[in-house]
Amino acid sequence: MAGLKLLDERRRQVFEKGSEPADFEIACGKPSLSGAVSQRACVFCGSRVVLYPIADALHIVHGPVGCAAYTWDIRGSRSSGPELHRMSFTTDLRETDVIYGGEKKLEAALRQLIARHNPKAAFVYGTCVVGVIGDDVDAVCNKMSKETGIPVIAVHSEGFKGTKKDGYKAACDALWRIVDSGEVTGEEDGLGPDSSRGVRGGRRASSASGRSPSSELGKRPYSINILGEFNIAGEAWILKEYFRKMGVEVVSTFTGDGRIDEIRNARTASLNLVQCSGSITSLAKRMESEYGIPFIRVSFFGIEDVSKALYAVADAFKDNKDIMARTRALVSEELAALLPQLEKYRKDLTGKKAAIYVGGAFKAFSLIVALRHIGMSVVLAGSQTGNKDDYETLKEICDDGAVIVDDTNPVELCKYMLEKKVDLLIGGVKERPLAYKLGVAFCDHNHERKIPLAGFEGMVAFAKEVHASVMSPIWKFAPRMASEVKA
Image (cartoon, rainbow, N blue to C red; front, side, top):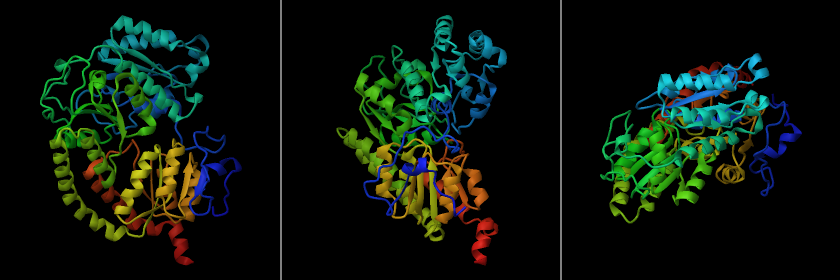
């Protein structure tokens, strides 16, 4: 493994801080290299993971059964009410459908499923096969929308036409059709003053603003949408509780524990918070352009970033001094409880090395800082969908000697994990087997996880999971450790 070299076509997508020229610019946004077995997902997967957490909508995959099976229930997105998003539906296109077309099959499936489940909307995901055979999915969706009276939206996510980021764009286009679909809804749709749904696993809490929503487009004072928050393991509920204590109303989340009616009401918010910037920024920009809703980029992972995010919201509503006062009290209270708990993990983890490979680069920024809080350094960092600015930021915050990679593959990951002698890999389901085969501890920070890692309490859970994995005695039996002992 030590003798492995980079493919020539990949050299511009790998940077080692301290050994490359300061003006080295990482190539990114490129199609994956043929034969390099990219860790990226396809366009369809990108769109599905953004839209999937909308719990009262029907999600149907128009394509072969394998596409639906691959993405079924892959997110740890929790719902405080309906769980239609947990069910997997597909038209199951086969050879005959490829020859004669699958439009009639799609129409029949939509008619049957909408009648049976009574969803608020339906999303139809186009896959590679549909793009090849040329089914007019838009026409079918428009027909069924008129027939059923609910939005039936085609999501153009044919996997071969781009990268996972193109899937994000397709999802944002679909969400825009809901946001821009007509009159906003009122109290009868669950957005009244007693309906901050989902806080702490479904407990209802009173609205921070204490006022009834308007059915007009006028902005609600001291209100936000949280974009790029998918309620993995209930994280949206943790964040809603923070904002409730601050006195800020959460109008909607895109799309964790999501509801179609709340998404319609999103344009009445005063501010958008963009967390997963790669997946949702295009929608935030569109809402700013069309409805004048400003947005700020935030992260809710790690102590500094959570605190910065909360203070940024309070500062955006600085005409209400009570919000800033409540925010200071909240952060102080949380830190007083958090920091002593981290210290016990820091004692064991100081000096350990970590590798990070995640979907969106925004998570890598937060993780680098969070790992430093528990004594660990990052020697490898990369993402599937990072852009030029993301990698410039990584170059700034990483230590000398750290390797930064764009759209890496298993061979490269293994090569650098062994060369840098990492103790921990943070990634997703596709990276887990690589870590275990090399005898490296692993922490799941992707959408499959069942443990909330956002917010202050999420930082404690993160430290606990990292400590348990890194300090496990099992790693002393790993072949690489045995060889090092012999040497």
